[in-house]
Image (cartoon, rainbow, N blue to C red; front, top):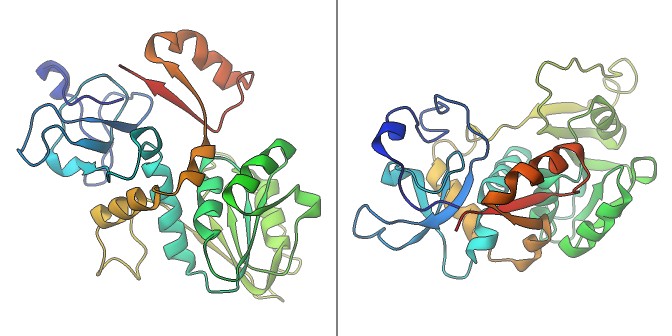
Length: 277
């Protein structure tokens, strides 16, 4: 959790991520923080705020890098703001319509956030799809249906792909109706992705569109700012259904034991919260 400041020697070499498209100098893990402002402008002093910054107990950032957490959003849930912001951006890219048939392939943090966001779309059929059947409980809490990939419902207008696997993207294309679109949110790094674009891709006029949170969609750039998007994400977190994304918590001093278990998968988690104080 974030408390407000770091020693000046650290502040000289560390900058808040996503300011002007840059990342901090030294690589540090983590970046979703909620805490209290200890020093700064009078209107922010003592306020609970969300900030994108590598994890540590205290640090200094520009006042513009923090967003005040609404009173009806508990700080324990507010730390999901960065994930929900990604979901909002994906929805702006996709422009889903009332009554759309929608699939979300991949029930990680981002996929679940997208599904939870779209669950409120009137008349929409939203299905969360994952190879792990235990994620059915998450889907139920978010108010959407669940299926494993072979059993997913097709004829979709939109598919949001978040599994990070070529197999997931292939299945996403298979689930589309004619003229449907896949909104691709996965990050593959240097992994090569092979797709069956010689099958029904052209005849059914399918589309794949990348969505990335670093920029606003073209349809919003002249009317919304990054601050507007983050403010909206925090407002949407007033919905307690999103608590299901938080699957555990540990104090900071237990991280040497917790991190290997999270990396190995022996401690299953969607979002595992770290408490610093």
